[in-house]
Length: 201
Image (cartoon, rainbow, N blue to C red; front, side, top):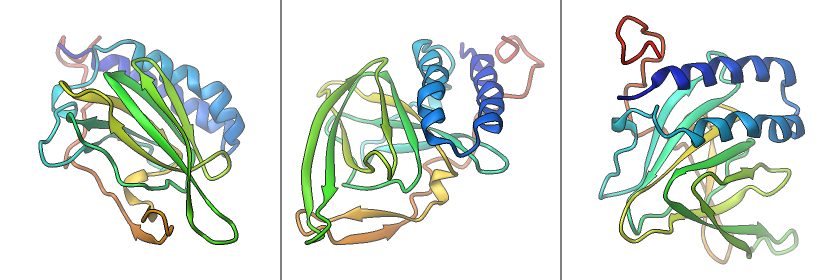
């Protein structure tokens, strides 16, 4: 049974936090990390339909979008062997792994040639949190590091990320193509119904 009340509490707390810190990215990362860490530490709240992998491609499920589009919360689900293209975000983002292990490859654009340079690589295990933004590094590729089961991470972005114009990059030339990702779902979790025991936690 999903403890959807935990996610409702997170949404309410993070909304108050964003109202206080606004667009101060350093504060968002320094103090906002605790909200995401607390959320992914408890794997009892995400409805299963928003954790289901698709054999064709990784899934990006919208869980919540702030009415003013100041932030959005998304679950990403990778089946074994799946990965994103090399892409950017153009806004701040925090990524927390709730199930499994993810592998991240970072890239940078050469300011003179425009070519894509390889950067650091790292694994993000369950409970780990990553940060992205144009200020600290915004181009990466993420894949499921496990060969036998899906990985699931919870992302918070400083916009309605499914509606943001972003870029996919070709290697190594750095040619970029604009895209708007959208979402894999047409419905979002109902965090506001307290009429039954399953949602009144």
